[in-house]
Image 1 (cartoon, one colour):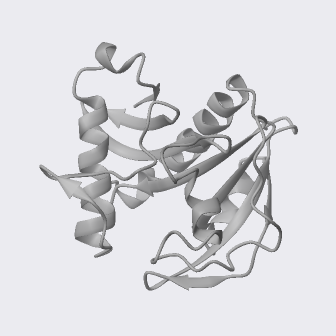
Image 2 (cartoon, rainbow, N blue to C red):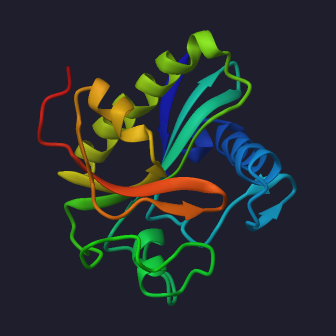
Length: 195
């Protein structure tokens, strides 16, 4: 298994990896979860997949096992900024605007973590290892980008996994029912050393 952080500047060095990640997101979010999201040619994408973002992929022999998108909270593309802030501003129909207790931050040192997934094809015996690899690379990549914290919208039970990996993960909003899944916004502190 390998873990790669993709950016617009290095996509050409990784063949089909980015397209395969968008295909895996399609399989996870559209096919399995039945979410109504933009897609083309069997790939899921949205307005936040821009040159400002980075994408972390856990993969093996071209198959995507897990992934996450990192977007700076300072990002701008037309009327959009980043998913959590835009939901709070009422720009997204599928995510309630009351997802955060405080105003969504805009700062160079805070990045958003979104579109987190582990492929349903990953066997149960490998899931924890794949999740830990994804979290570890996400944290290292975010730190390299200058982030001291991440803001993410994740399944309600996920903060326990984050704490097992040695990172500080605290609720930043109420638990909400979104797309038939109980989710919560969290702040992930990156200052602590991972175990």
